[in-house]
Image 1 (cartoon, one colour):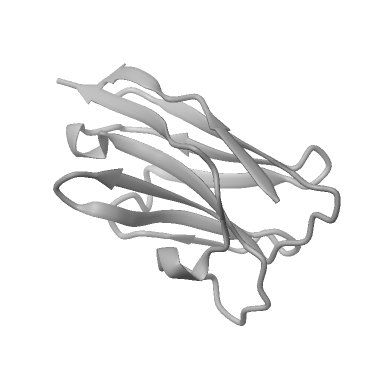
Image 2 (cartoon, helix red, strand yellow):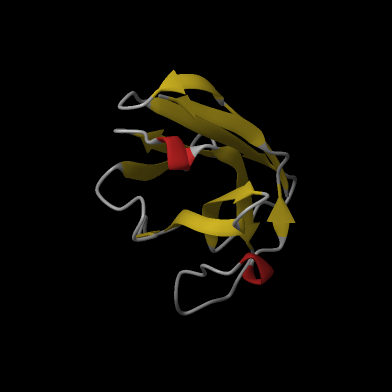
Length: 125
């Protein structure tokens, strides 16, 4: 499984941005796809995840109500719509895939098997 994240950039606080993650692979089979973000201060932290088949979602407390994760199984794309962005959302964002099987949506980086390159989101005041 290969993952390609895109959509990062500079945005003002209160603004919105949508990240995209293109998934590919000859034998594409995953349980969930997730977004993580990383800063030098906080390290890598969970943002959101979605199960591939059912579309069940999970969010961190810090983004719940502001961010929305979605997926398109036809095009093998995963999106992260980020609204009401704050300065502390500034980070490099990574998409990741868990091949499973799992009974719960994973939220630890070690539970994910494949990682894309990061895309930088900078929120200015």
